Amino acid sequence: MAKIKDLKPATYEWLEKIPYHLWSRHAFPKDLKSDHITNNIAESFNHWVGDLRGKNVLTLLDNIRSKLMTRLLKRFEKGCLFKNNVVPNVKNRLNVLANECRKCTILIASGNEFQVKDCNVSYIVNINKRTCDCKVWSLSGIPCKHATSVLINKRADLESYCAFSNIKEFYIKAYKEVIHPIPDVKFWPPIEVNPSKVLTPVLRRKAGSTRKARRREQEEAPTIGQGKRSSTLKCSLCGDPTFP
Image 1 (cartoon, rainbow, N blue to C red):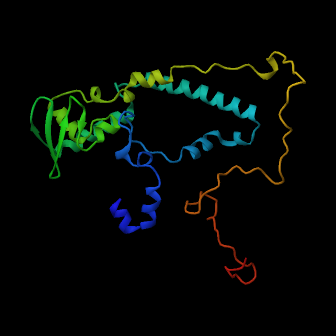
Image 2: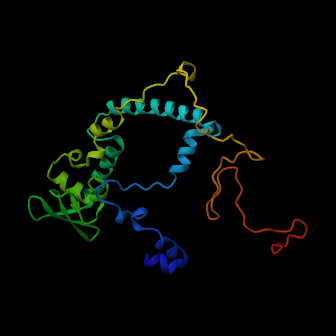
Image 3: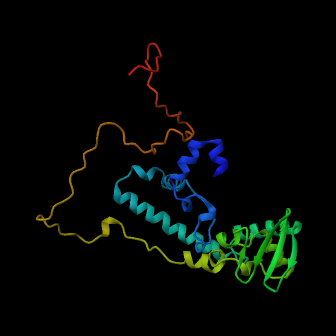
């Protein structure tokens, strides 16, 4: 933050207004066991929904239910085919760490406590508490490079030292539930409407087409096919930017 303050004071002031646990990994809750940062979840959901956003509410919800129903089944079947005790992306990460940790030097203090030197910096690793001074193991639930060097030296199973959220068993458990299909509206039983109850108002659309794209901030980069948003008004004749 000190370097950011020296380079761009405006950026520093903007970041100071946002709680650290929302954007900085070092402040993430350690019980979550996740160091992943995602800031485009709304855009990903809109892309996943696709053209359904322009449908009515019942059609939108029913199609989302159908997409989720098939998605859960695919994830469940995919999890059942995992060959390792951990999910594939964690297994790949462990393989990369196994190669990177070769340059680390291990000093043994006890059966559970070690001092690992990496690039002239020493880190204390406790495999019993599953902690390291770099904080990566505590935040992600996956052994860091320094812990990996210790576990390989002890000929321990790396997969058994990963958090439960990275285990194949819990991946399958998360997707084993079923979203049951719903019959078509033609087969629904008739519903008696009580005229004494207040019904929803009639939908009156405003003039113009319905906006589907999210309104972007001025500092955000434009998407493909979308021009950069400008906040300066100019005269169409002389080009004067001060024209009201």
